[in-house]
Amino acid sequence: MTAEEVLVVGAGVVGASVACHLTRLGHDRVTVLDARDRGVLPGSTGLAPGFVGRLSATPELTVLAEDSVATYLALSASAPEPAFWQVGCLEVATTAARLEEAHRDVEHGRRLGIEARVLDAAQAVALAPELVAADRALGALHIPSDGAADPVALTRLLVDAAERRGARFRWNTPVRALEVERGTVVGVRTGEGGELLRAGRVVVAAGIWGPVLAASAGVRLPMVDVQHPYLYTEEVPGLDDTPIDTPIVRYPDHSVYTRRHGRRYGLGSYGHTPLPLTPSASLASAELPFREADFGSALAEATALVPAFRTARRGRALNGVFAMTPDEIPLAGPAAGVSGLWFAEASWVTHAAGVGRQLANMLLETGDLLVDPDRLSPGRFAAWSEERIRATALGHYQGVYDVH
Image 1 (cartoon, rainbow, N blue to C red):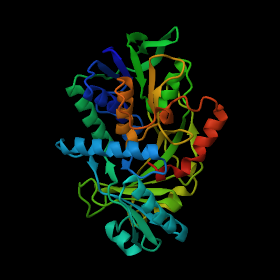
Image 2 (image 1 turned 135 degrees about the horizontal axis):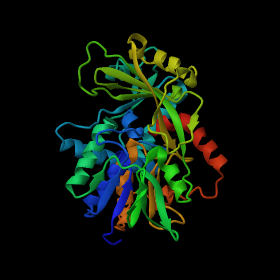
Image 3 (image 1 turned 120 degrees about the vertical axis):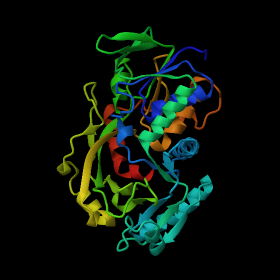
Image 4 (image 1 turned 30 degrees about the vertical axis):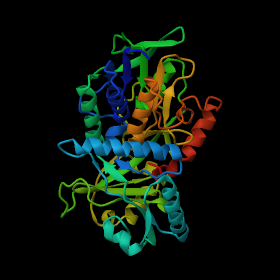
């Protein structure tokens, strides 16, 4: 690839990571476009609870997560304030079957080079007494190298690093459409007037809005946007501004996950009927109005499970939107049928830095790839119908917390 301009659409954690890794490799002709003001994250990044887990049933996700953890640790080490804390993770078993699964996960982790061990119930409670239910826990899988991020702070660190190495970020610049001529992307149309910004390569990292932009170039992105609830307590007496000092906690049997957020605790649940969303250009935020009835009994069951939520008053409740694929693996690579168009889509904070590195190395043809490109190819579901893509992706919804 020559030193031609690369336009990245979207300055969330994924787009910022792509720019950071491109400039790290010496390619400083990078411009990142975003519709928002600097410091505002209206997409999924700004709503993410920041769980970063390395161990996954899918080897590709494990590799991407491990690379991301290394990047986040390095960024935090050189920053005035950290944006990632390696506090570990507890997967609490409330059934004998899950406890047996935890022992198998230890062996799985060992094969992947990830340390994990099974704790008894008392050991698990001692590590996170406000989050592990002593009356329900039979034990827990403990992964010390997992952690939690502040996604907003982390994105700022990635943006800053990219800017120091020459990348340009243009804020308040909404991208309306991709411009394609004779099967090749030549740039993007921005703003109300549709100004054409030309580029040799365009990377779409627009999160839940990715399919809208892809459609403007006649490309189908095989992903489904879905709504998800997250609750906070009000401020809890005795907690200070320390972001997190105990492991993140998951309850696989109940599709629940929880963590400390400074003076509050947070909790999310996948234990409800999936609520897909069809994105549109007019959608201004990844946060939708919160209606508890939309999530059935899942939140009542989740708050009854986690000790901190049994006693603390409930605070903010949000309904955030994120993207899923049929195999839960991100879409990162070139578009089929449109030369010069690339995607970095459907990636969570857990894998964002790894996806950015993978895509930058592909764009610059370094040969130094983390994952087989075919496993991340945006065209890998080309033969699937829209109905099959949607049904398969939504069928994975209640298992997402296990890998993200």
